[in-house]
Length: 162
Image 1 (tube, rainbow, N blue to C red):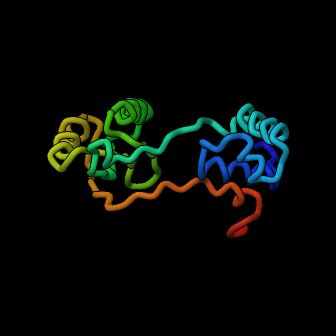
Image 2: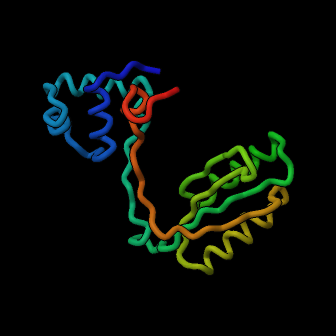
């Protein structure tokens, strides 16, 4: 894990809040010269701390006004089943995120759909029809807020480790 100082964490927090900041704006926000700021951002990128810059899209504006979380339980817990269903879930155009879990739920899938009929067809055709799926449970999402990673927590800010 790369060592991040206070300035690196400030850069990461600022970019999580607005990845479209110009280098000049970012430098002013974190109190660095633009050249020093650019060097740090490039280092964070090359170290793999910054993986990508993405636009957050409005699902409603795209006609995808229904969001759901689908809990998936598998029949068998073998590597091949996990790989096959994981690949399948990630390939669905409705999929926003896939979490592979420990516990009674094996996968939690965040999906976006046009309406309830779209969701119903998705669950039947892409989930319950799969031989490796034993059971699914669908929960509707009424609101969703994407938060950035707590960059300070790994460095002793927040609830202290035991």
